[in-house]
Image (cartoon, rainbow, N blue to C red; front, side, top):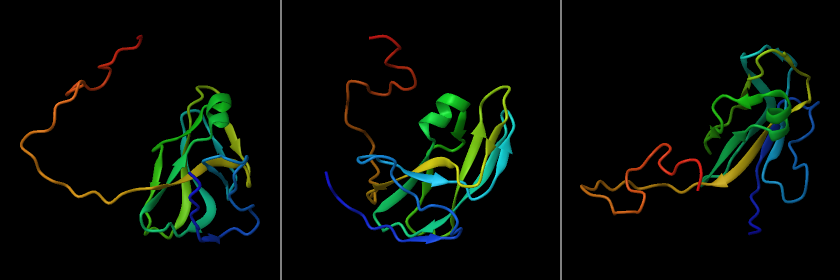
Length: 149
């Protein structure tokens, strides 16, 4: 699929690089910190990304953790994925959390701290039903498929 979406962006911190894909074919645009901070073990902080965007109707933005920060430093996003609705025009921020039990994590202005994915989202019409169609899984929920095959 080669659909292209134009995303108007307002740079609130003009010293930051524009969000960008690290490699061709990447799904996420890197978001940068518009401030410096230190996250102590198990601390969370709302970190400004220095941009505002105008997501087209029919799409939503999802702020996701960066896998390298998660694997190497235990840095994640509290509400992952963070949802940005198409009518939101405020500054994009990431709610970072340091899940490392003993090491502080330093964020410097300009560091890549999260990624932004823009995805199509349909408007859903709810239709009340007395019964739902049968499936093999049925009502099996959390852990219903087990751990091993």
